Image (cartoon, rainbow, N blue to C red; front, side, top):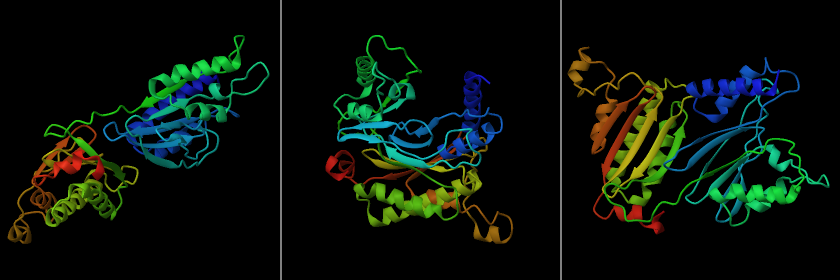
Length: 337
């Protein structure tokens, strides 16, 4: 089977897995499971799979034997390592997931092995140490690709016969202007995922509380927000994701000059979120109202405003809590971050 056909098959499997799975490790496990029985002997596929939150820079990734990406920061270069065997090589493989946050101004280099395995006239190899040393300089972002290609040509010489494809991709997070925060400016304080498992609403509640600590919310308001987050997260895990551990709940904590916004997203789209009916204890005892249904009513009364929406893939619940006067300074001031 030609390598091009193997790659086309793998891409199709990845696209199909990505439509029903969210976590990178789960996607790679699924693709490996489907690819292994049909791939020719002594063939395999390396693959890096990552999910990036464009607002917060939060990156979660898994690696199936691909060359390690390099992250270019103000303090030097870092390797983004995650263990995992190439796709199709062995059945039943598990793929480690790692998380990081790409800060403004930082960039990540993704590349094929044709770069590091290129040889010069003396059969010396370009190699990972050389690449890491070059990445450790001042050049990053869009300038990195032409810089590395220039270094490759200088190393191999003018008569170099290319042995493999050389592909370079640079991902850079742009700097955001340090303007003052107003009602239309939104600053992301945290972005994370929680596994859809009973009890994980407590972890979500605490992580939100940690994220909004810089805002100095009054204790009573903070406790109400924590209660609303826990209840909304539990609803998302139970009713949206059906407690499927492969479907995480995504939570983003943001703030403007006047309010803090908690966005909670599950994977149970298409079906509308039911409108919360004010609970009537006597009606519930008489069987005229469902014994459930306190959740959204409780959430609505714990925050200043709640907004729900649905699309083909997701339920989205947004919780809004008004900030006290002076609260936005905590969002805009670097010393509070």
